[in-house]
Length: 173
Image 1 (cartoon, one colour):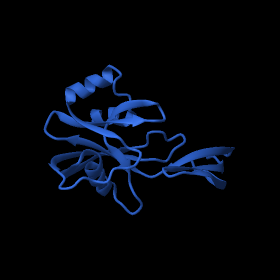
Image 2 (cartoon, helix red, strand yellow):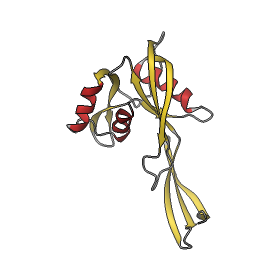
Image 3 (tube, rainbow, N blue to C red):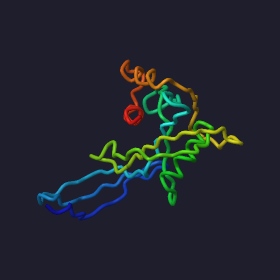
């Protein structure tokens, strides 16, 4: 079966984090369709392990949901940056640590029906305190806390952790 054919496309929105493309395509079966795609850079998702059996989570306010959430640290991969380099940078920015060990665990598309973002998951360990504080993004207000891995997984079961990337990441350990 052949791939879809793009007949036309236009960017209908461009923001600081993502853009939206509307495309008219001929699907592999031959039918035409209008597709709306959120274009988003890759993301690096960190699973910080300060010692065996423990994990670092961050708590941050999510305006889109009007709530505070416990999550794994994560961030966009900048243009020209590797996911591994983004993982190191985000570890410094979000939890104030420099990882000596970065291990790529998996990569996945959380919403492939309408978004091209790929999330790359890394276990970061052998964490050292950073010499200086990293510049924090203007829209982030982050609390950092170390949890027993068992406790974090229990929080998922109790519905206290509802962020998909965090649930997946905790399952990768």
